[in-house]
Length: 472
Image 1 (tube, rainbow, N blue to C red):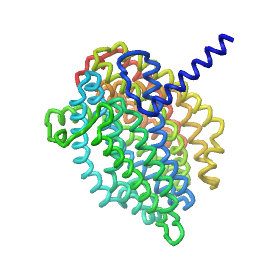
Image 2 (spheres, rainbow, N blue to C red):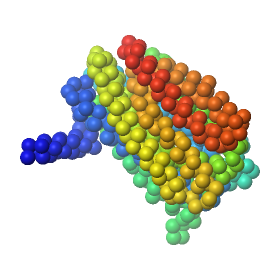
Image 3 (cartoon, helix red, strand yellow):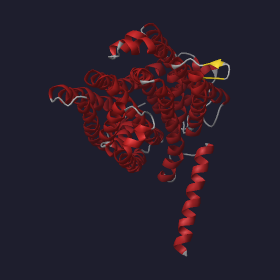
Image 4 (cartoon, helix red, strand yellow):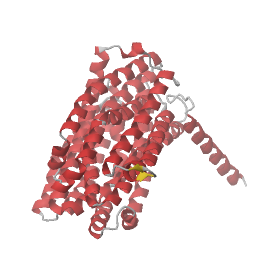
Protein backbone atom coordinates (compact mmCIF):
# COMPACT_ATOMS: atom_id res chain seq x y z
CA UNK A 1 0.00 0.00 0.00
CA UNK A 2 2.85 2.35 0.85
CA UNK A 3 4.38 1.75 -2.60
CA UNK A 4 1.09 2.72 -4.26
CA UNK A 5 0.98 5.86 -2.13
CA UNK A 6 4.56 6.73 -3.10
CA UNK A 7 3.82 6.31 -6.81
CA UNK A 8 0.65 8.38 -6.46
CA UNK A 9 2.53 11.17 -4.71
CA UNK A 10 5.22 11.15 -7.40
CA UNK A 11 2.60 11.37 -10.12
CA UNK A 12 0.87 14.33 -8.52
CA UNK A 13 4.22 16.04 -7.92
CA UNK A 14 5.12 15.60 -11.57
CA UNK A 15 1.69 16.79 -12.67
CA UNK A 16 2.04 19.86 -10.48
CA UNK A 17 5.43 20.63 -12.06
CA UNK A 18 4.00 20.23 -15.56
CA UNK A 19 1.18 22.67 -14.78
CA UNK A 20 3.62 25.17 -13.29
CA UNK A 21 5.89 24.93 -16.34
CA UNK A 22 3.01 25.51 -18.76
CA UNK A 23 1.68 28.45 -16.74
CA UNK A 24 5.14 29.99 -16.66
CA UNK A 25 5.29 30.39 -12.87
CA UNK A 26 8.39 32.18 -11.61
CA UNK A 27 11.16 29.93 -10.29
CA UNK A 28 14.71 30.50 -9.13
CA UNK A 29 16.76 28.07 -11.19
CA UNK A 30 19.89 28.70 -9.12
CA UNK A 31 18.40 27.03 -6.02
CA UNK A 32 16.56 23.87 -5.05
CA UNK A 33 16.11 20.63 -6.97
CA UNK A 34 18.00 20.41 -10.27
CA UNK A 35 15.56 17.76 -11.48
CA UNK A 36 12.63 20.12 -10.91
CA UNK A 37 14.49 22.97 -12.61
CA UNK A 38 15.08 20.81 -15.70
CA UNK A 39 11.42 19.76 -15.85
CA UNK A 40 10.13 23.31 -15.41
CA UNK A 41 12.36 24.62 -18.20
CA UNK A 42 12.41 21.63 -20.51
CA UNK A 43 8.67 20.97 -20.92
CA UNK A 44 7.82 24.35 -22.49
CA UNK A 45 11.12 24.35 -24.42
CA UNK A 46 10.41 20.90 -25.86
CA UNK A 47 6.88 21.95 -26.81
CA UNK A 48 8.23 25.19 -28.27
CA UNK A 49 10.61 23.50 -30.68
CA UNK A 50 8.20 20.64 -31.34
CA UNK A 51 5.88 23.25 -32.75
CA UNK A 52 8.70 24.87 -34.73
CA UNK A 53 9.26 21.49 -36.35
CA UNK A 54 5.55 21.40 -37.23
CA UNK A 55 6.22 24.22 -39.72
CA UNK A 56 8.43 21.99 -41.85
CA UNK A 57 6.20 18.93 -41.54
CA UNK A 58 2.98 20.84 -42.32
CA UNK A 59 4.54 22.51 -45.36
CA UNK A 60 5.82 19.19 -46.67
CA UNK A 61 2.48 17.45 -46.03
CA UNK A 62 0.41 19.96 -48.02
CA UNK A 63 3.05 20.67 -50.66
CA UNK A 64 3.58 16.93 -51.15
CA UNK A 65 0.20 16.80 -52.92
CA UNK A 66 1.54 19.20 -55.58
CA UNK A 67 4.12 16.76 -56.97
CA UNK A 68 7.84 16.04 -56.79
CA UNK A 69 8.90 19.44 -58.19
CA UNK A 70 7.10 21.16 -55.34
CA UNK A 71 8.63 18.77 -52.78
CA UNK A 72 12.09 19.36 -54.21
CA UNK A 73 11.56 23.15 -54.14
CA UNK A 74 10.55 23.18 -50.49
CA UNK A 75 13.39 20.85 -49.56
CA UNK A 76 16.09 22.79 -51.41
CA UNK A 77 14.78 26.14 -50.17
CA UNK A 78 14.70 24.89 -46.59
CA UNK A 79 18.28 23.69 -47.00
CA UNK A 80 19.30 27.24 -47.94
CA UNK A 81 16.96 28.74 -45.33
CA UNK A 82 18.96 26.72 -42.83
CA UNK A 83 21.55 29.49 -43.21
CA UNK A 84 18.93 31.96 -41.98
CA UNK A 85 18.05 29.59 -39.13
CA UNK A 86 21.75 29.35 -38.29
CA UNK A 87 22.06 33.12 -37.99
CA UNK A 88 18.88 33.23 -35.93
CA UNK A 89 20.05 30.44 -33.62
CA UNK A 90 23.50 32.00 -33.30
CA UNK A 91 22.05 35.36 -32.29
CA UNK A 92 19.62 33.54 -30.02
CA UNK A 93 22.54 31.77 -28.31
CA UNK A 94 24.18 35.14 -27.62
CA UNK A 95 20.91 36.54 -26.26
CA UNK A 96 20.35 33.51 -24.03
CA UNK A 97 23.90 33.59 -22.63
CA UNK A 98 23.81 37.32 -21.87
CA UNK A 99 20.28 37.44 -20.47
CA UNK A 100 20.75 34.25 -18.43
CA UNK A 101 23.99 35.56 -16.88
CA UNK A 102 22.36 38.85 -15.86
CA UNK A 103 19.28 36.99 -14.59
CA UNK A 104 21.47 34.73 -12.44
CA UNK A 105 23.04 37.90 -11.02
CA UNK A 106 19.50 39.14 -10.25
CA UNK A 107 20.06 42.20 -12.48
CA UNK A 108 16.74 42.41 -14.35
CA UNK A 109 17.31 45.87 -15.82
CA UNK A 110 20.55 44.79 -17.51
CA UNK A 111 18.92 41.56 -18.68
CA UNK A 112 16.28 43.58 -20.57
CA UNK A 113 18.90 45.97 -21.93
CA UNK A 114 21.09 43.13 -23.20
CA UNK A 115 18.12 41.51 -24.94
CA UNK A 116 17.21 44.77 -26.68
CA UNK A 117 20.72 45.17 -28.09
CA UNK A 118 20.60 41.70 -29.66
CA UNK A 119 17.33 42.66 -31.36
CA UNK A 120 18.98 45.73 -32.89
CA UNK A 121 21.84 43.59 -34.19
CA UNK A 122 19.43 41.04 -35.70
CA UNK A 123 17.45 43.69 -37.59
CA UNK A 124 20.61 45.03 -39.22
CA UNK A 125 21.58 41.54 -40.38
CA UNK A 126 18.08 40.78 -41.67
CA UNK A 127 18.18 43.61 -44.21
CA UNK A 128 21.08 41.94 -46.03
CA UNK A 129 19.56 38.43 -45.95
CA UNK A 130 16.16 39.54 -47.25
CA UNK A 131 17.71 41.50 -50.11
CA UNK A 132 19.75 38.49 -51.26
CA UNK A 133 16.71 36.18 -51.02
CA UNK A 134 14.46 38.48 -53.04
CA UNK A 135 16.95 39.27 -55.79
CA UNK A 136 18.67 35.90 -56.25
CA UNK A 137 15.91 33.35 -55.53
CA UNK A 138 16.17 31.54 -58.89
CA UNK A 139 19.96 31.54 -58.81
CA UNK A 140 19.91 30.01 -55.33
CA UNK A 141 17.82 27.08 -56.57
CA UNK A 142 20.11 26.58 -59.57
CA UNK A 143 23.14 26.61 -57.28
CA UNK A 144 21.50 23.85 -55.26
CA UNK A 145 21.28 21.65 -58.34
CA UNK A 146 17.58 22.12 -59.10
CA UNK A 147 16.51 21.41 -62.69
CA UNK A 148 14.82 24.00 -64.92
CA UNK A 149 11.28 22.91 -63.98
CA UNK A 150 11.96 23.21 -60.25
CA UNK A 151 13.52 26.66 -60.75
CA UNK A 152 10.57 27.82 -62.86
CA UNK A 153 7.91 26.60 -60.43
CA UNK A 154 9.73 27.25 -57.16
CA UNK A 155 11.54 30.60 -57.45
CA UNK A 156 8.55 32.52 -56.07
CA UNK A 157 8.38 30.22 -53.03
CA UNK A 158 12.07 30.80 -52.34
CA UNK A 159 11.73 34.55 -52.87
CA UNK A 160 8.88 34.91 -50.36
CA UNK A 161 10.37 32.63 -47.71
CA UNK A 162 13.85 34.18 -47.75
CA UNK A 163 12.52 37.70 -48.31
CA UNK A 164 10.48 37.34 -45.13
CA UNK A 165 13.46 36.11 -43.11
CA UNK A 166 12.94 38.90 -40.55
CA UNK A 167 10.17 36.89 -38.90
CA UNK A 168 12.34 33.74 -38.86
CA UNK A 169 15.19 35.53 -37.13
CA UNK A 170 13.04 37.46 -34.67
CA UNK A 171 10.96 34.51 -33.53
CA UNK A 172 14.14 32.56 -32.70
CA UNK A 173 15.98 35.52 -31.19
CA UNK A 174 13.21 36.79 -28.94
CA UNK A 175 12.50 33.29 -27.72
CA UNK A 176 16.20 33.08 -26.84
CA UNK A 177 15.74 36.17 -24.69
CA UNK A 178 12.76 34.65 -22.90
CA UNK A 179 14.57 31.34 -22.40
CA UNK A 180 17.62 33.08 -20.93
CA UNK A 181 15.36 34.82 -18.44
CA UNK A 182 13.70 31.52 -17.55
CA UNK A 183 10.41 32.52 -19.22
CA UNK A 184 10.20 29.40 -21.35
CA UNK A 185 6.38 29.29 -21.31
CA UNK A 186 6.11 32.56 -23.27
CA UNK A 187 8.54 31.26 -25.89
CA UNK A 188 6.44 28.12 -26.14
CA UNK A 189 3.17 30.00 -26.59
CA UNK A 190 4.60 32.18 -29.36
CA UNK A 191 5.41 29.03 -31.36
CA UNK A 192 1.99 27.57 -30.57
CA UNK A 193 0.35 30.63 -32.06
CA UNK A 194 2.64 30.69 -35.10
CA UNK A 195 2.22 26.96 -35.77
CA UNK A 196 -1.55 26.96 -35.40
CA UNK A 197 -1.79 29.90 -37.80
CA UNK A 198 0.45 28.06 -40.27
CA UNK A 199 -1.66 24.89 -40.06
CA UNK A 200 -4.84 26.88 -40.70
CA UNK A 201 -3.40 29.11 -43.44
CA UNK A 202 -1.46 26.47 -45.42
CA UNK A 203 -4.42 24.62 -47.01
CA UNK A 204 -6.27 27.91 -47.54
CA UNK A 205 -3.41 29.71 -49.29
CA UNK A 206 -2.28 26.63 -51.24
CA UNK A 207 -5.63 25.19 -52.39
CA UNK A 208 -8.12 27.99 -51.71
CA UNK A 209 -11.35 28.08 -49.76
CA UNK A 210 -14.77 28.72 -51.32
CA UNK A 211 -14.51 31.65 -53.73
CA UNK A 212 -10.94 32.33 -52.59
CA UNK A 213 -8.46 30.92 -55.11
CA UNK A 214 -5.33 29.34 -53.69
CA UNK A 215 -1.81 30.25 -54.82
CA UNK A 216 -0.36 26.76 -55.06
CA UNK A 217 3.26 26.45 -53.95
CA UNK A 218 3.53 30.20 -53.43
CA UNK A 219 0.72 29.96 -50.89
CA UNK A 220 2.81 27.71 -48.63
CA UNK A 221 5.47 30.43 -48.29
CA UNK A 222 2.83 33.11 -47.66
CA UNK A 223 1.12 31.02 -44.97
CA UNK A 224 4.37 30.22 -43.18
CA UNK A 225 5.58 33.82 -43.23
CA UNK A 226 2.29 35.20 -41.93
CA UNK A 227 2.10 32.52 -39.23
CA UNK A 228 5.57 33.36 -37.93
CA UNK A 229 4.79 37.08 -38.15
CA UNK A 230 1.79 36.66 -35.85
CA UNK A 231 4.01 34.76 -33.40
CA UNK A 232 6.49 37.66 -33.41
CA UNK A 233 3.69 40.14 -32.65
CA UNK A 234 2.79 38.05 -29.59
CA UNK A 235 6.43 38.12 -28.44
CA UNK A 236 6.73 41.90 -28.86
CA UNK A 237 3.54 42.38 -26.85
CA UNK A 238 5.05 40.49 -23.90
CA UNK A 239 8.40 42.24 -24.19
CA UNK A 240 6.69 45.60 -23.99
CA UNK A 241 4.12 44.60 -21.39
CA UNK A 242 6.70 43.07 -19.12
CA UNK A 243 6.42 39.52 -17.91
CA UNK A 244 8.46 38.24 -14.98
CA UNK A 245 11.97 39.72 -15.15
CA UNK A 246 11.97 41.02 -18.75
CA UNK A 247 10.35 44.32 -19.67
CA UNK A 248 11.76 46.36 -22.52
CA UNK A 249 11.44 50.11 -22.82
CA UNK A 250 12.55 52.41 -25.62
CA UNK A 251 15.58 53.44 -23.56
CA UNK A 252 16.84 49.86 -23.75
CA UNK A 253 17.13 50.23 -27.54
CA UNK A 254 19.55 53.14 -27.35
CA UNK A 255 22.73 51.92 -29.03
CA UNK A 256 25.12 50.47 -26.47
CA UNK A 257 28.36 49.73 -28.31
CA UNK A 258 29.81 47.73 -25.42
CA UNK A 259 26.86 45.35 -25.36
CA UNK A 260 26.71 45.19 -29.14
CA UNK A 261 30.36 44.16 -29.19
CA UNK A 262 29.66 41.51 -26.55
CA UNK A 263 26.70 40.26 -28.60
CA UNK A 264 28.91 40.03 -31.67
CA UNK A 265 31.74 38.39 -29.70
CA UNK A 266 29.42 35.62 -28.48
CA UNK A 267 27.08 35.60 -31.46
CA UNK A 268 29.47 35.36 -34.41
CA UNK A 269 31.04 32.05 -33.34
CA UNK A 270 27.59 30.70 -32.49
CA UNK A 271 26.26 31.83 -35.87
CA UNK A 272 29.31 30.43 -37.64
CA UNK A 273 28.84 27.25 -35.62
CA UNK A 274 25.40 26.69 -37.09
CA UNK A 275 26.38 28.02 -40.52
CA UNK A 276 29.03 25.31 -40.62
CA UNK A 277 26.37 22.71 -39.88
CA UNK A 278 23.93 24.24 -42.38
CA UNK A 279 26.61 24.47 -45.03
CA UNK A 280 27.33 20.80 -44.56
CA UNK A 281 23.64 19.93 -44.96
CA UNK A 282 23.53 22.02 -48.15
CA UNK A 283 26.52 20.17 -49.58
CA UNK A 284 24.92 16.84 -48.71
CA UNK A 285 21.62 17.92 -50.30
CA UNK A 286 23.52 18.88 -53.47
CA UNK A 287 25.37 15.55 -53.43
CA UNK A 288 22.09 13.66 -53.17
CA UNK A 289 20.60 15.72 -56.03
CA UNK A 290 23.60 15.08 -58.27
CA UNK A 291 23.88 11.37 -57.54
CA UNK A 292 20.18 10.44 -57.32
CA UNK A 293 18.20 13.09 -59.19
CA UNK A 294 14.87 14.66 -58.26
CA UNK A 295 13.34 11.49 -56.80
CA UNK A 296 16.28 10.95 -54.46
CA UNK A 297 16.19 14.61 -53.44
CA UNK A 298 12.48 14.42 -52.69
CA UNK A 299 12.90 11.23 -50.63
CA UNK A 300 15.83 12.67 -48.72
CA UNK A 301 13.95 15.88 -47.94
CA UNK A 302 10.89 13.98 -46.71
CA UNK A 303 13.16 11.95 -44.42
CA UNK A 304 14.81 15.14 -43.12
CA UNK A 305 11.44 16.61 -42.20
CA UNK A 306 10.90 13.70 -39.84
CA UNK A 307 14.47 13.89 -38.55
CA UNK A 308 13.97 17.59 -37.76
CA UNK A 309 10.57 16.89 -36.20
CA UNK A 310 12.23 14.89 -33.42
CA UNK A 311 15.61 16.64 -33.25
CA UNK A 312 14.01 20.00 -32.46
CA UNK A 313 12.24 18.73 -29.31
CA UNK A 314 15.56 17.24 -28.20
CA UNK A 315 17.12 20.61 -28.93
CA UNK A 316 14.45 22.11 -26.68
CA UNK A 317 15.69 19.94 -23.83
CA UNK A 318 19.23 21.04 -24.67
CA UNK A 319 18.15 24.68 -24.41
CA UNK A 320 17.20 24.00 -20.81
CA UNK A 321 20.86 23.13 -20.18
CA UNK A 322 21.95 26.46 -21.74
CA UNK A 323 19.66 28.46 -19.44
CA UNK A 324 20.70 26.51 -16.33
CA UNK A 325 24.39 26.96 -17.14
CA UNK A 326 24.05 30.70 -17.78
CA UNK A 327 21.97 31.44 -14.70
CA UNK A 328 24.04 29.29 -12.34
CA UNK A 329 27.31 30.78 -13.59
CA UNK A 330 25.76 34.20 -12.99
CA UNK A 331 24.96 33.07 -9.44
CA UNK A 332 28.59 31.86 -9.03
CA UNK A 333 27.59 28.17 -8.84
CA UNK A 334 29.61 26.40 -11.57
CA UNK A 335 29.33 22.94 -9.98
CA UNK A 336 25.54 23.15 -9.95
CA UNK A 337 25.72 24.19 -13.61
CA UNK A 338 27.76 21.07 -14.44
CA UNK A 339 25.40 18.72 -12.58
CA UNK A 340 22.46 20.26 -14.43
CA UNK A 341 24.06 19.56 -17.82
CA UNK A 342 24.95 15.94 -17.06
CA UNK A 343 21.43 15.16 -15.86
CA UNK A 344 19.90 16.86 -18.90
CA UNK A 345 22.18 14.87 -21.20
CA UNK A 346 21.02 11.63 -19.62
CA UNK A 347 17.35 12.51 -20.21
CA UNK A 348 18.03 13.54 -23.81
CA UNK A 349 19.92 10.35 -24.60
CA UNK A 350 17.01 8.25 -23.34
CA UNK A 351 14.52 10.21 -25.46
CA UNK A 352 16.62 10.03 -28.62
CA UNK A 353 17.22 6.31 -28.22
CA UNK A 354 13.45 5.79 -28.18
CA UNK A 355 13.12 7.86 -31.36
CA UNK A 356 15.90 5.85 -33.00
CA UNK A 357 14.00 2.60 -32.39
CA UNK A 358 10.82 4.17 -33.78
CA UNK A 359 12.51 5.29 -37.00
CA UNK A 360 14.44 2.07 -37.57
CA UNK A 361 11.33 -0.09 -37.08
CA UNK A 362 8.69 2.07 -38.76
CA UNK A 363 10.54 4.16 -41.36
CA UNK A 364 8.41 2.82 -44.24
CA UNK A 365 4.99 3.71 -42.82
CA UNK A 366 6.28 7.09 -41.62
CA UNK A 367 7.56 8.09 -45.08
CA UNK A 368 4.35 6.69 -46.59
CA UNK A 369 2.36 9.43 -44.85
CA UNK A 370 4.00 11.99 -47.15
CA UNK A 371 4.28 10.25 -50.50
CA UNK A 372 3.13 7.18 -52.40
CA UNK A 373 5.71 7.59 -55.16
CA UNK A 374 7.75 4.35 -55.12
CA UNK A 375 11.17 5.89 -55.83
CA UNK A 376 10.69 8.75 -53.37
CA UNK A 377 9.39 6.36 -50.69
CA UNK A 378 12.32 3.96 -51.14
CA UNK A 379 14.97 6.67 -50.78
CA UNK A 380 13.18 8.35 -47.88
CA UNK A 381 12.86 5.09 -45.94
CA UNK A 382 16.54 4.25 -46.41
CA UNK A 383 17.67 7.76 -45.43
CA UNK A 384 15.51 7.82 -42.31
CA UNK A 385 16.79 4.47 -41.05
CA UNK A 386 20.45 5.32 -41.63
CA UNK A 387 20.32 8.81 -40.12
CA UNK A 388 18.44 7.53 -37.06
CA UNK A 389 21.27 5.16 -36.15
CA UNK A 390 23.21 8.00 -34.50
CA UNK A 391 20.33 9.42 -32.48
CA UNK A 392 21.62 8.39 -29.04
CA UNK A 393 24.86 10.28 -29.71
CA UNK A 394 22.92 13.27 -31.08
CA UNK A 395 21.09 13.52 -27.76
CA UNK A 396 24.25 13.84 -25.71
CA UNK A 397 26.14 15.98 -28.22
CA UNK A 398 23.50 18.68 -28.57
CA UNK A 399 23.22 19.09 -24.79
CA UNK A 400 26.98 19.51 -24.45
CA UNK A 401 27.09 22.01 -27.32
CA UNK A 402 24.25 24.07 -25.86
CA UNK A 403 25.85 24.00 -22.43
CA UNK A 404 29.02 25.50 -23.89
CA UNK A 405 26.94 28.11 -25.74
CA UNK A 406 24.96 28.93 -22.60
CA UNK A 407 28.22 29.61 -20.79
CA UNK A 408 29.26 31.97 -23.60
CA UNK A 409 32.00 29.57 -24.77
CA UNK A 410 30.68 29.54 -28.33
CA UNK A 411 34.14 29.26 -29.89
CA UNK A 412 34.76 25.73 -28.59
CA UNK A 413 31.46 24.43 -29.95
CA UNK A 414 32.21 26.17 -33.26
CA UNK A 415 35.60 24.50 -33.60
CA UNK A 416 34.03 21.10 -32.94
CA UNK A 417 31.50 21.76 -35.71
CA UNK A 418 34.21 22.97 -38.08
CA UNK A 419 36.28 19.82 -37.70
CA UNK A 420 33.29 17.49 -37.51
CA UNK A 421 31.33 18.78 -40.49
CA UNK A 422 33.82 20.35 -42.89
CA UNK A 423 37.04 18.50 -42.24
CA UNK A 424 35.45 15.09 -41.69
CA UNK A 425 31.82 14.77 -42.82
CA UNK A 426 31.96 16.45 -46.24
CA UNK A 427 35.13 14.64 -47.45
CA UNK A 428 33.76 11.38 -46.03
CA UNK A 429 30.44 11.89 -47.85
CA UNK A 430 32.28 12.63 -51.13
CA UNK A 431 34.38 9.50 -50.67
CA UNK A 432 31.36 7.24 -50.08
CA UNK A 433 29.15 8.89 -52.71
CA UNK A 434 31.62 9.40 -55.55
CA UNK A 435 34.68 7.24 -55.06
CA UNK A 436 33.05 4.26 -53.34
CA UNK A 437 30.14 4.47 -55.82
CA UNK A 438 27.51 4.29 -53.05
CA UNK A 439 25.47 7.14 -54.53
CA UNK A 440 23.07 8.97 -52.25
CA UNK A 441 23.42 6.24 -49.61
CA UNK A 442 26.98 7.40 -48.97
CA UNK A 443 25.73 10.87 -48.05
CA UNK A 444 23.21 9.34 -45.65
CA UNK A 445 25.88 7.25 -43.89
CA UNK A 446 28.16 10.25 -43.35
CA UNK A 447 25.54 11.93 -41.15
CA UNK A 448 25.37 9.58 -38.12
CA UNK A 449 29.12 8.86 -38.26
CA UNK A 450 30.09 12.55 -38.11
CA UNK A 451 27.45 13.46 -35.52
CA UNK A 452 28.55 10.64 -33.23
CA UNK A 453 32.21 11.70 -33.37
CA UNK A 454 31.25 15.30 -32.59
CA UNK A 455 29.18 14.17 -29.60
CA UNK A 456 32.21 12.42 -28.12
CA UNK A 457 34.39 15.50 -28.72
CA UNK A 458 31.80 17.83 -27.12
CA UNK A 459 31.63 15.66 -24.01
CA UNK A 460 35.42 15.66 -23.64
CA UNK A 461 35.66 19.46 -23.91
CA UNK A 462 32.77 19.93 -21.51
CA UNK A 463 34.41 17.76 -18.85
CA UNK A 464 37.62 19.78 -19.11
CA UNK A 465 35.66 22.69 -17.61
CA UNK A 466 37.16 25.70 -19.40
CA UNK A 467 33.60 27.01 -19.96
CA UNK A 468 33.31 27.72 -16.21
CA UNK A 469 35.80 30.59 -16.51
CA UNK A 470 34.21 32.42 -19.48
CA UNK A 471 33.24 36.05 -18.72
CA UNK A 472 30.03 37.39 -20.30
